[in-house]
Length: 196
Image (cartoon, rainbow, N blue to C red):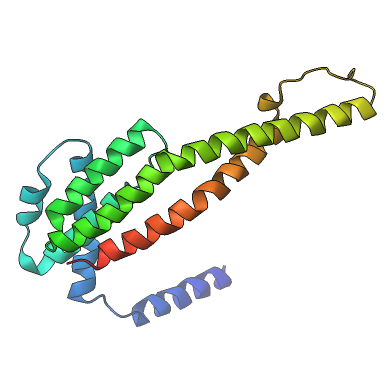
């Protein structure tokens, strides 16, 4: 029992030695989540982001903006489906409301839109071609393995698309195809963070 008491005493000594957070740290801890909350409400179609942010005192507004911008940037993603496409548009609209240097922001958004357009057009073609190639390769590999085991007559068909190994390989292929787009998008997000 003495060990538990001494461990507790040691822990309390370490807690006592910790520095108290500064007012700036306390403000950050309080107001960054407020900004995040406002951005989430905005993305849901609730509230007025500009008006909600303007209610905060200038001393803490930068923390509110930091939280809001972070959430909006997290919602700026590749347009893999209609929901993500709409969320990205809404996030860009929200960022336009929050950022002061509209010209610089619009220049970055132009580059982001190019990435999105390329992803939807050329990227879609690449994904279709890669899928067809993977399906064909996997079909051949599977047929050969089954022939070697004597379980399939030559020319027999199997549903390779439902095979777990095919699905796993397709996920890896998709991640590889998306990687260059995501890298560019992350670079643009970093630029957006730096815009006042």
